[in-house]
Length: 211
Image 1 (cartoon, one colour):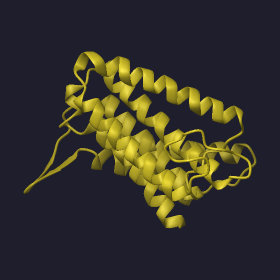
Image 2 (cartoon, one colour):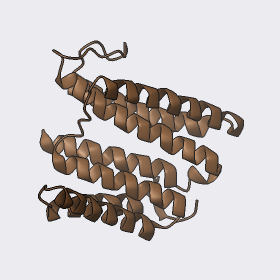
Image 3 (cartoon, one colour):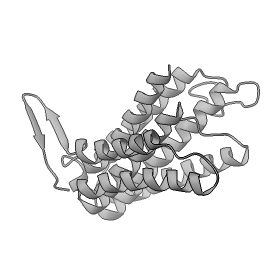
Image 4 (spheres, helix red, strand yellow):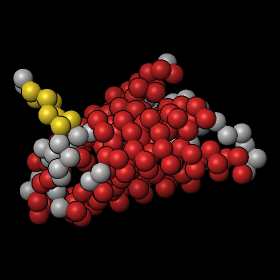
């Protein structure tokens, strides 16, 4: 189960990067639209993690989303949230340019409000095991920096730096620093930065750094 959680979280992080850097789609987005898209998908990832925690504690919380029920299983949460990421991406690409920013901006605000409400209710974020948390954090950082700078090298470096800084922070606050955790964070960042430029199609595989 821990390996499944890890794969789910890494895949979600890579999906975020793919949808923001894939040349088949990102070049059609204006800078403000791309920022709104990143905010929408990032808020969905946090909501996903919080909903997983709600599912694991049915004696304390009741899920408010009627589409998955009052007490969904973690598997059902994973399926629903992964589908939501895909649907949101397809809808964002399909929307006319004049509608993208208001729609994605509104969804980002709604999702952020839900996340903040859950936080006030003391709902935790369940990304799976500890290594999964580091992998998805690195992947999210790597993909976002790559999208903003148009440089996979900078995205990779940002993910690696985040891993090192996190462990340095832990050590400065009396917690043990972990080299494996730093390496997993860096690996997630570099994978998202470099793999998200690949485009797969019928009979062809291409790579581009254009946005």
